[in-house]
Amino acid sequence: SAGVESGQHLSLSIRSAHPLEYGNRIVGSVVMGVDFRSHTFVDLIKQKLGLEVTVFDKETRLSTTIIADGQRAVGTAMGNPEVIATVLRQGEVFLDQSAILGHMYDTIYWPIIDVAGERVGMYFLGQPRGVIENVQSGLFNSILVAALIIGGIMITAGVFFARSISRPVKQATDFAENIASGNLDVQLKSTARDEIGVLVQAVNKIKDNIDTIIEDVVKLSSEIQHGHIRAIIDVNKYQGEYSRLVGDINESSEIIARYLELVPSPVMTMDKDYNVLWMNKIGLKVLGKSLDQVVGSKCHELFKTSDCNTERCACRQAMKSGNSCSSETQATPSECTLDISYTGVPIKDNNQNIIGAIEFVTDLTEIKNSQRMMQSIASEATN
Image (tube, rainbow, N blue to C red; front, side):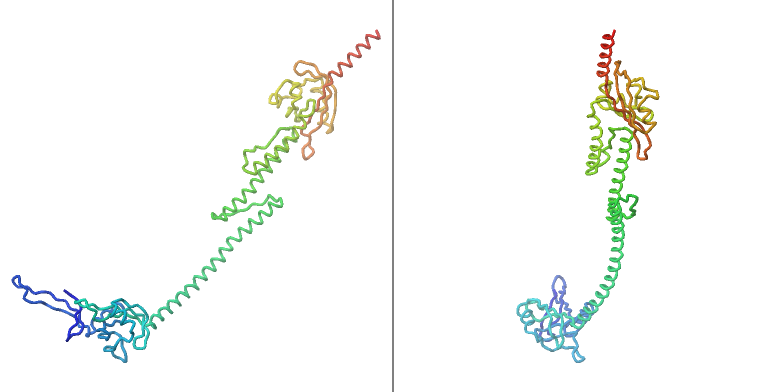
């Protein structure tokens, strides 16, 4: 067995005893121990932990590493009644700052329990506040220096980061202002793959969509100018509000065709080679054909007038002179003969180049038949 013992001669000591046996009989024991008064125990603990160590016999310092006036402060009494009450009387650990021989220590005390279970003294571990404060001061200074270094790095990084953000944001702002003012010849470039790169891609996408819409509108306008009255933009190329905008543009261009559909006589457009590009419903009804059947056909193949393929053709004269021209003739569409009056109006592009003609046809058959009937009656009356 082992433990702390309190004796009359050795005061407090740590002892270990082992029985001696002879012929299955215990004939004695071997006892080994360390007398706390030798200071061996406290010096060993201080060497291992770097702390001051004291062993108290009751309230008196029996062994200690604390030096007072050049000697170990043994034989001196504990002067803090709170420690005595907490440790020796209540058997609890005391952890606090304490004054020891005129110096402040961070301390811990706990009771020494002997082999009989009695509280016979106290153990003490402590560190002078001056040492701790020096360590704290050094640690604080180290932290302060580290904070200054880190702060400097953060400020430098912050300035660099701010510039890295502000520069592309400024470029994006200038780019957006150019787009807003109608300058679409600008291009925003960025190799960044972060949020700024995503912003640049999104802004460029807006510009690309606007460019595409403008190209489609220019193409639509050109097709309408060339006589493709029913031309529209493919709405499926766009999404969201862009799709709605293109739909509104198509609706606006459709109004032209609707107005021409209201004309109560045949109307058609043709290119310079007399290929039919569009015809209204009245004209299709006269021919007895669908729009798909007439688009691409030569106009002289449809109405088959006596003016066709001659200099008398009003559309030929209009495209040649640049002015509207009119003529009267007979047409034979769908195996019937019609007396018509028609007017050819030149179609010009933005550069005033003649690119085709639009023809308005008026059916004079009833009027001409009435005239012929009156002439016949008058002739018969004369004879």
